[in-house]
Amino acid sequence: MKTGVNRRPFEHRDEGAAMARAAKPRESKEKRTRDLRAGIALLWGEQDQPARGPKPSLTPRRIAEAAVTLADAEGLEAVSMNRVAAEFDVSAMALYRYVPSKAELVELMVEAVSAERPDLLAAGPGWRPGLTAWARLLWALYQAHPWLLAATAMRRQVMGPAQLGWMDAALAALESTGLAAGQRHQVFLLVVGQVRNLAQQLADFDEDHNREWGRLTGELLDRHADRFPALTKAIAEGAFAPAAVDPLDFGLDRILDGVQVLIDRTEGVSS
Image (cartoon, rainbow, N blue to C red; front, side, top):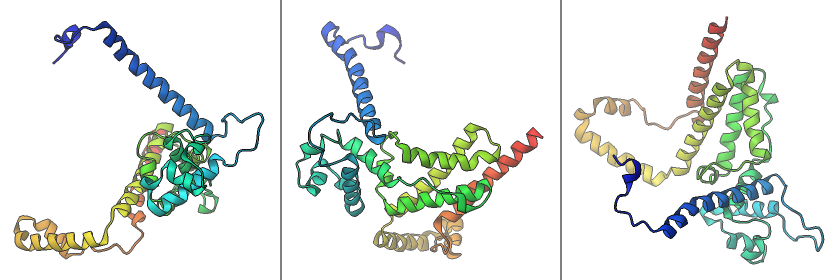
């Protein structure tokens, strides 16, 4: 194991190069900070406005809406500053007056499709109906905009008021559980993970590939059934048949059943 000052015993000790290397992380961190601040300003409407001059012909919101339309039709990879600029018959450079880079544009897109805070009042009383309704609304959002998976998985996103409103609504539904704040957050993450996992499966599904995979796997198991008896038996009994119920039901119900067990246990300890 390499330790101490002898970590790189044969490294050339060039003082200027060492100073340059030491400066790079600081520059990178400063750049990231500026990028995050620019994204926050855009999402929260806090960017500087020109004090005089003609009214801008575009707005970050209009640009984001055009990018959403493009992503809905062709996927997130189709979104570029050039493609979006073409929707307004302007150059990509013209967009940079409103949106610093594609990173901020993607954040604006996520915010645009998350604009409505989930209304859980109609779900009925209690934490479980509210959280179930919240999960179903999130599931519908991913189905309507499959590119959201990639847009929110690349890194921790800067969040705007609409996105924070979604998170706030889920945590509000869990307040009556009596669980600790950390536990409520973990439940939130479990539900989000379940919805995202199913949305990813749906996005990755290819009917032709699935049919061919099933045919080839079936042939393999016909020849080697004695090696995989439990799998062969499960397939024969319909384990891999298309589910007749909503795909979200089973996993979400099991998660919420577990949350109820945790609530009961917590209440038992406190009583």
